[in-house]
Structures are given as C-alpha cells and as structure tokens.
Image (cartoon, rainbow, N blue to C red; front, side, top):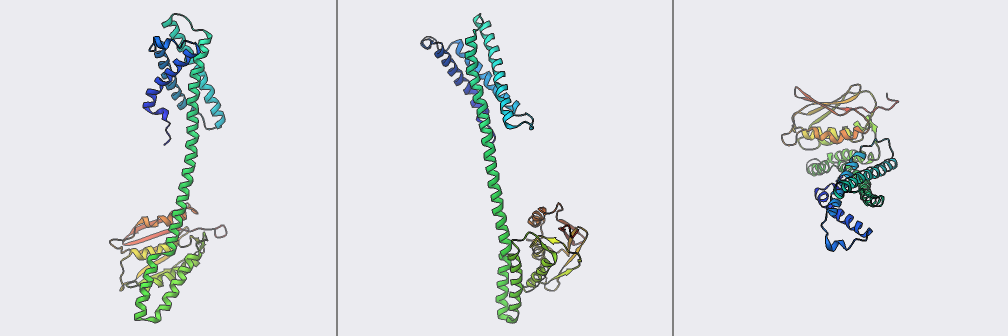
Length: 342
C-alpha cells in the first residue's frame, strides 16, 4: 500500500512529543545547561520545542504533497533538488519567524544569530529526514510495484500456458472418443480405424500448431471437418458443417475448432435432427450461423468466447460479435488480413 507511516494519526500525535523532547535536550547539551533538568524539566522551552516540532512536521507533510504535484516534465533529480531546497528554505523561514515571535513576546528580547542557527539546524535536519523518508518510500514502492507487475505477468503467462495445454489436450473430447471406441469395438469394429484416424488428425493439428501464431483459414477448416466427423461417432451426435466462403485469410490456430466445439457441446443432442452450422463471410468477419437449441444446464454463454476474443485482440481491434434473433444465433469472428490479402 502506497502510504508512508508518517501519515499515520498516532505517529503524527506522538512524534512531535518525542522530537520536541530530543530538540530540547540537544539545546541544553549545546548550551551546557544539563543541570537545569534537575531543577525544571517541564518548562516553557520544552512546550515551545514540542509545539514547534508539531508545526514543522505538519508543514513538512504538506510540502511532501505540494512537491508531489510538480509537472512530470521535470526529471527525478530535478524534482529532488527542488523538493530539498524548497523544504529547507521554507523550514528556515518558519522556524526563524516562530523563534522571533516566541523570544519577542514571551521572553522579551530578540534571539541571537547563534540561537537562530542552532534552532534552524536542528529543525532543518528533521525536515531532511521527512524528505528522505518520503523519497526512499516512493522508490521502494516503485521497485515493489515493478516486481509485482512482473510476478503478475509471469502468473498470466503460466495461466495462459495451462489454458493452451488444457485446450490442446481437451480431456473431455479425448475420454469421449475412448468411450466411443469401446462401444464400436463391441458393435462395429470396422469403424474404429476411422474414428482413430479422425481423432489423430485433430490432435496432431492441435499439438503441431501450438508454436504458430496464425494459420490459413483453409487449413483450420479442414481440421474442423475432421472434428465434426469425430463428433458424429459419439452417441446421439448428428452434426453438419456447411462452408460458404471463398476468400483466403488468417485465423488464430485452434480458435475455429474451439468455437465449433463450443456450439456442439452447448446444443441439445438430437439424433433425429442434425445440428447444421453454416459458415459464411462478409468483408471483415467470418460468420457462423445455426439454430439455437441450448442445453438447460450447460447452454451457450458469451463468457465461453472470452479466451478466443482475448487471443484475437492481440492481432485485431475488432471483437467477436454474437447476435441472436428469431431462434438463430450468429457468431462473427474478425478476419486477420495481411498486406498481401488486403
């Protein structure tokens, strides 16, 4: 938390008492009047030192806020020089005026230059301590903030790697394929090889494209066809994927796969009526359209597109668009065009 302890109310209350006592003792030591401690410790001079310490410390706190508002065009070194010089000069003026008023109105005479020098030296030291505390805390806060940002970035990288790994493995689909194999081995062993071929093509693509940032849409959709055929081997699945595009552009690898799988998994299974997914395009988007028939528990949610949207935000300012009307759902993902494509 970017809050220095000098702003704590308890510190502001007890610190002037402690520093005022220390200043009073230093003055007695400098003037060789230590024997006065045995005679009268709680004198007017002590109260004056505590009051002056309170004024100086509160004034120093105010100066820290004022100099913190310096324009950003000044370098850190220039700000430091201005802050130290300004604080010292204003402290000297404040202490000198206070000493003159105290000596003139309470003691009845004017202070000597030696006394002014002594008071100004002690209270300027207190002001410098305040400035140094603030500067050290400020730079420590910047260093710690930078470290926390680096830790957060590392955490995000680990989480992203884990998500990509999870998406690549896709344990739900993997185990469903194993279960379908068990059923086919007992019922129709001739189809097992085809199921394995489709599954191998899908997983080979997913695992081989992890190192690539972008791929051609044709390459991605060829694997989507394999994924749809793979789903059709699973119980109660009946999926059709209809292409209707002509241009060539780039997509994030695995994004169209993830989108099609999300559509299939969020739709109620109906072996008698196929789920038809239509693929079209406009000038800037690849468009997926289908009749929505969402599951009650795990229906389609816009939040499921957040990961794909995040991956596309790296390459495009456009976002994924989801539209629903008259029982249909339309999902638009941005085209990624190179200079040669555009």
